Image: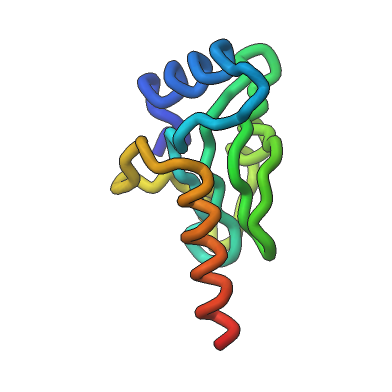
Length: 110
């Protein structure tokens, strides 16, 4: 499976080019580790470096940058790789994604 569709890639790049420093774009794509920890909600992509910005949640949820090349190359075990959530629809704010991840983490420890 392709990590990013052509449409998602174009939207991520468009967000990067339109950025005004606020990082307030909605999540375009959600990536996840199918057998363990790791979820990435991405809102921007620099086409020159192939580095995306978004919310990264592995043990803690935090905003940051991630290399799409590295994610594509990552093997998570059992012959699997990081996957794209095909059911995710664009339009959720990164703040809402942060709330979702914090709620998941709270429920895991209760």
